[in-house]
Figure 1: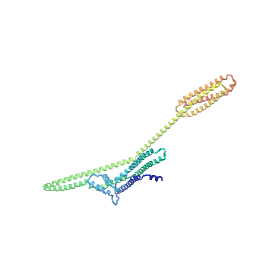
Figure 2: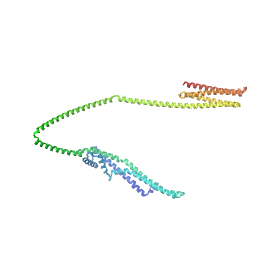
Figure 3: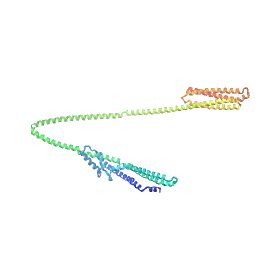
Figure 4: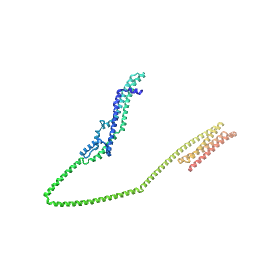
Length: 485
């Protein structure tokens, strides 16, 4: 219902204009295009049947007209421009009282013309409706929305109608383009004209031999020359009989000599022809020998050897590509090893920081040992925590040792860092021993009860020291292993 109302809103004059300017020309153009296409196809098929020698009930009128024009032109010209005659005759052909060229021009121009009409109607409708829309908005009270919408509805419907006309023009333009593609008259015209030119040049024109202008001139010259020879012979015969009768014998003898000379010339020409024939035979023999050489070359193994060499070269190139890919993989593996070594270096730095923190913690424990027994117990706990950190460091170093066996780069730097780490660990263990022993002796001189209480602490510290010593030995062993590698 809405669509019916929408179409009812289109003015009648606009519908008439769409029908007159869009629909009717499009339908006429489609019908003319189809008629021209079928006409050209039919004419081309008839000409092709003439070329193939197939019988026709009635030859096409255009073929008869072209034959007449070609015969007339051949009588007046030595070289006839056949394509020009065909184009001139084609320009006079009509389909449904309209020339073929006008139909082709209409089919090419009408789609663009419809697009232009559609765009022109769209822009005109948009311009007029936008102007009326602006006037409506400016004159209507903004607070009254319902009246504003009612006033705006008419310009908007006008814009929709403008777009409808444009859509109709574009639709029929696309339809014409599709029809032009499906019924391509250019291809049919080219096929027809090519067949006509082939028929006229290669089939009909050879039948006009002797009817050209040059042939007629030659025939007239031959006739004139024959008459001249007849008259000349009669005059010479009369003059000879009257004035030179006495020398007829001499002329006869001279003619005999001329005949003999002619016979000699003919014999020499025969000898020359025999020589040419012999030369042709020799050339034939040479050609046969060349063919034998070509066959021998074809039967030889040279092409096979060339193919084998090409295959070997391709295999060599393939091996080189595989070597390059293997080298690329090795480079990537080395890069990964370098990255892992950098990670191990960062872990060693963190481990040294942990050792420094542990050292600071031990110093703090020694200072707090001077205060009370509870602080001393706290020192023991921190030392145990430090021993666990050392054990973790030992485990990390073991893992690092297993991974560093497969690495080949930056070994000297790692060895130097490990040597520094061993020296630091040794210094740290000696400092811890000295600090713990000195702190205990300074805080508890001559106190046997406290020494008994400190005995577990001292044993724990000694275990820590032993763990540190084991760590140092493990680091030395790792360094020797790296030096051997």
